[in-house]
Image (cartoon, rainbow, N blue to C red):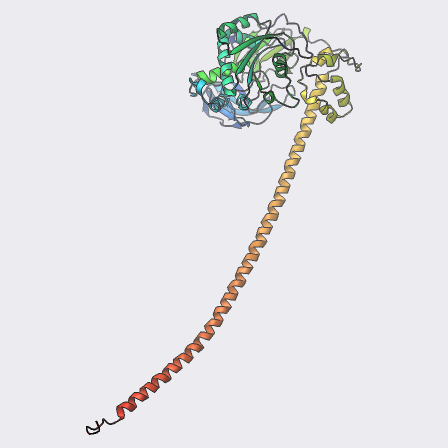
Length: 526
């Protein structure tokens, strides 16, 4: 199948110490695991445990606020020893409450019965299992998998295209566990009702492609596509355009055009959740950069601090200068290595001093258009910048600011060294804050109007009740008066009736006495 062309993008050099080679290594279990009680969008989770409680591996510690109530599974058996605020793996250094779990020997797992007959299972049952197992998008966005599959789709794209340097965990997964990815893709397709499955890999992933071909064998239900290694080819919308020649509407979702995209790691986790009955407690994480001694791909328990992962990679080199979670273009710089790795942490990058070149001074925009040529979202970055510098956030939003995927291509291409992405991120934050304030104001207004309506309704009901009581009282008084009047007339009539009866009785008595006093008739008269 021929591929379609997409707009923009960059061809990036692969760093000399990338972690693509070598087998996946286990990261030792640290003495404590830290699990944030917020989801990837910052919403608080509903905690289902307490300090001092012993938990089993895979047991739900918290539930998400999404419709599917996606669980946060315990990554190890142990005891909850604290709930404390800690730094999140975000660029702004925000804090959130974390569960602190001390792993214990045995690592007993909570029961999650395998669904061996998943091919005939109801999609709703499969979605429920994925939510129970804690599955979210493992490619970085962290959208709940069950919710993403709920709308259904005709086409499933399984994304194995890692186009940002240093991120090699998906390539390692495909190289070593291709059969799990293939089986998981079929499970996701069954859940979404998709009849077309496309597995996309970068064209430089030779060993991974061979492993996938071997896993597919004669299975024609899944089509393997090798895509050019152009950043950010692995972006959801860019991959859809490349493979299907269709654009996701601005402000819309891939499901709006009948397509759903899932990362290869999500597919493998779906297979383990459904067929093996295993909750999501580990993930593969790339460790790379000049600042770490032994780069590689590690299987890490969720909640592991970055410092434990770096220690598994031989520790820092003397040249270590900066710590980033994610890739060099879209990742977030960390303030320290005590930050915990989460379900969306696909890479840890330790930059050396050679990588931190002193940035050139920012120059005025010359409106050359290089940023627009590089933008994969077909935006006009220079126009967005002009609006934002003029304080017109709404104007920038009207030009499609929300469609910016913050890939950084525009900033790399800019000859004036303008940090365009930072301007866009700041503007998005301002717009989100303003939207949240409007939402709170609308909610307060709705509550105020509802309160006034309730008070008016209660007052009207009270007036109606008083009027009803008055009417009932008046009716009772009228009835009582009528009864009293009837009661006075009845004795008089009875008295008259009694007197007549007495007189009649007297008259009868007199007549009887008179009759008895008369002499009997003689015989001759008879």
